Amino acid sequence: MKKRIPSKTANYADLINENGYYVDKTPFIEVLERISDKYVFFLRPRRFGKSLFLSVLEHYYGIQYTDKFDSLFGNYFIGIPGNTTPLKNNYLVLRFDFSGIDTQTEKDIMRLFNEKLFIGFREFNYNYKLLTNEQISEITKKSYPSEILGSFLSTLGSQGSDSRIYILIDEYDHFTNELFSFNLEHFQEVVSRNGWVRKFYEVIKQFTGSGLIDRFFATGVTPVTLDSMTSGFNIARNITLDLEFNNLAGFTETELKELIVGTIHEEGKFDLNNLLTDMRAWFNGSRFSPDGGGKLYNPQLVLSFWLLLKIILPIQNLLLIIM
Image (cartoon, rainbow, N blue to C red; front, side):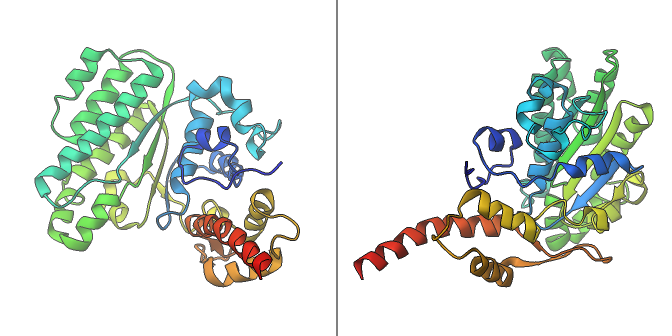
């Protein structure tokens, strides 16, 4: 049975429940657990599938999805008996998305960043119900991101729960990259020196030391912000250029072919080899490891192309009938 062309959703459960085709990146879960580093940054261009992989991690590790494990992962590598790792459904997942922070007005950047924190806290408490409304209210009275996060984690730690936290951060550098491009002085003020971004990550570092935060995975586009934080978060490893993670986001040609066959291809409808040749020329060109690794296709570009193809092909067939 053919699956649907994947939608642009970054929610893994929605993709699976809607019978969307998922290019299986779950083998990288086992690789991430195998390496010695538990705190990692993974950088790729925009629209490369990073947010979807974060959602995969959230659904795999979140204890709230324990009963849904088979339906979500049963058809993929990590769901096969023998491939499942010891840490599945073993964490309280705290997720932040720092995209969409307006950098036009300097005084609003921190306020908007704090709002992103509050969204993450509310989702966390909705999933796990570990804090009272009064406790959340006290936390939101704090002004600086480091104080807000520190208060949240301290309050959570005082609850006596044995569960550990897995922090997921999407677009860690979305707003700081804009500052770096258009307002370098303010970038230095908020990220390096004693900037509040650096202080925010120092709090995460502090609570990894206490054991409350056990794992950390963040996505972004460039290493500029990470490098500028220096010792603020020097426990993290940047896996962006590692050969074993070259294919974590983006489609290999083998994955692309399987995706086409599993969704839109029908015998006699179009020539698969010709399509692959064209797509190789137009969309295949990303390689991230200096040690090698195959070229990758940008998922957003090829999926948009296929959606267009679904419109064009019927028109072509109609023209052939008319002629």
